[in-house]
Length: 258
Ligand SMILES: *[C@@H]1O[C@H](CO)[C@@H](O)[C@H](O)[C@H]1NC(C)=O
Ligand SMILES: *[C@@H]1O[C@H](CO)[C@@H](O)[C@H](O)[C@H]1NC(C)=O
Ligand SMILES: *[C@@H]1O[C@H](CO)[C@@H](O)[C@H](O)[C@H]1NC(C)=O
Ligand SMILES: *[C@@H]1O[C@H](CO)[C@@H](O)[C@H](O)[C@H]1NC(C)=O
Image 1 (cartoon, rainbow, N blue to C red):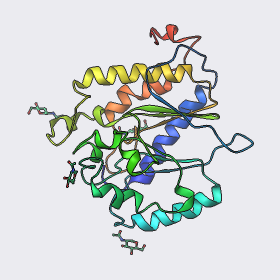
Image 2 (image 1 turned 180 degrees about the vertical axis):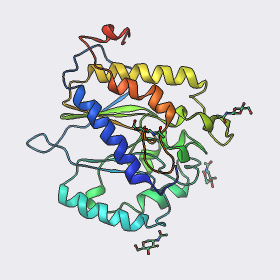
Image 3 (image 1 turned 90 degrees about the vertical axis):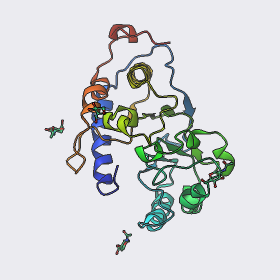
């Protein structure tokens, strides 16, 4: 998405998600879902977490990226953050070509240099990451370039005690992108199957999660008062999954969670 309205759009998404999460407090256990997981054990004695969330950033330091990065470093130090979440559009304009693309260091490693930001970064892709080589940022080889950069799949879960973070790949939902030949749909097409599987896996994982907080993260907001407006595809497809009140097990939702 264009950078102009990002903070508000992300905030709206997170608020929608927090509401849905509160409704899921009593979610029971089922079998493991298929989304890959990262275990991030909290280090603070009281089990609390402090994180920073940022999106739409990779600009080789321009567009005030460097200034924002410096302030993130200051705030990150104050809060003693555990990790950073990125909501996508990580590298403008078209992601990175490969894991040795100099753009990666110029837009990430050389920018987020503060001590407090030397923590894992858990990232989803945005549409700008999809219009080049959409697989490059997911390649494990990227962590040889910068060990912080943790996007183990297009959608995955970070288990961190008090909170489970469900990172959801929202770009394939947006129908009009599918008419744009710049998008790299390897591993995604056909759209309907990809989305159906993703939503099933998400539903299973939300149902199985025992964490008090379940926070769903994606690049595109469900609702937004800003220029891009609501994303009707997410209203129709993703929102019902977030609103669902899981019953005693995944089976009650008609799902088979494996
Ligand atoms: C960066 O921030 C300064 C100070 O707020 C502002 O004047 C300038 O226009 C910004 N530059 C860009 C490219 O947004
Ligand atoms: C990686 O991408 C960069 C930037 O496009 C290019 O210069 C370089 O040749 C590529 N390297 C490999 C190994 O493909
Ligand atoms: C995509 O392109 C097809 C064929 O040109 C057209 O029929 C369809 O309306 C387009 N869809 C969108 C969402 O732009
Ligand atoms: C966008 O979503 C919000 C929240 O569901 C809704 O109140 C609003 O009417 C929607 N806007 C449009 C233009 O559909």
